[in-house]
Image (cartoon, rainbow, N blue to C red; front, side, top):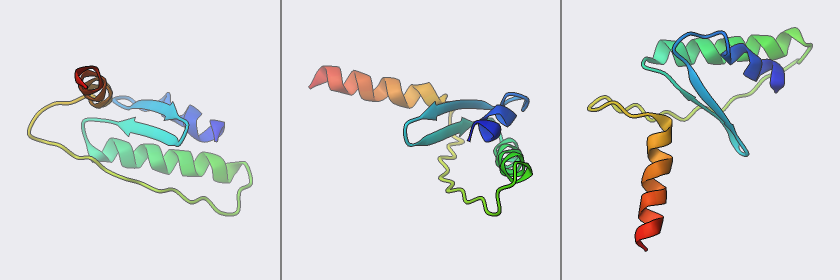
Length: 82
């Protein structure tokens, strides 16, 4: 897993956050995300893996600019209101 995550550091325009349940990737365009996934898969295969499986889930919002931290902050604000 660390080999895959280390590949993300070299991808311009990619933000990422490792969480307990997976890794969140964020970029301005889908091509950057696809490139990150491709590099991560290849990094693990080079280490000798016979199979690599990934689950991708996209939140592609184009009507306004959002950062991945915006969602976390919105939930925190709502928790304070209750």
